[in-house]
Image (cartoon, rainbow, N blue to C red):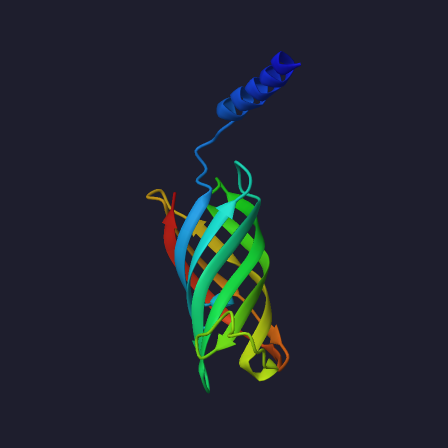
Length: 159
């Protein structure tokens, strides 16, 4: 039985090694606007060896009447347009915000102190030969106050 399990793992490993492509799966980038609301630093990981579904997490901030620390998390899908360098980037994210920078709270929760934003997005993404990426997207923000039109611009490094 151990031999069969070992052979199964070996087969899966060897097929994964042979099937790898030069598509970079990881991005780290700064974003103005977008899901972090005002600005954020984000990490994104594609879950496949070619453009497709990905996940992202970040840390950002927003200021209006107070300072909000934001935690954007989301999923996206890359639709390839040309040679895996140009994409339509469609996604859905949630951005958790906490007033005065205390994202996780101090035990007492006051609804006026925190905000959950739902942020759908659609945009254009470009990957360059020197492993940089940039993206511009429409990212309307929906929360308890309604729907606010919003834009995002990202630039970062692929690895």
